[in-house]
Length: 88
Image 1 (cartoon, rainbow, N blue to C red):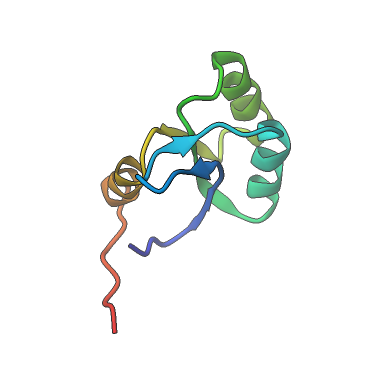
Image 2 (spheres, one colour):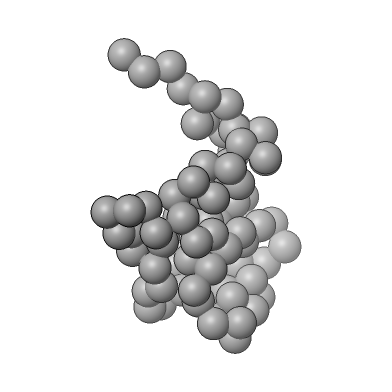
């Protein structure tokens, strides 16, 4: 998918497409904002406190969307105006 506007994402991913938690979420949210991201896809396994701190640090111009799987990440992009990219 492609999407107008910056997109950032972070987390670990298993071979089955499951997105896992990681550290330094606040710092990554700030880096996403500074790079122009309007959407930041993060692991849903992060704690409520981590997500709240990241949202505060990123500010109102960055939507933080927690996801548990690669499929959910793709769906989040599609729901926010992402369009399929032709392969080949």
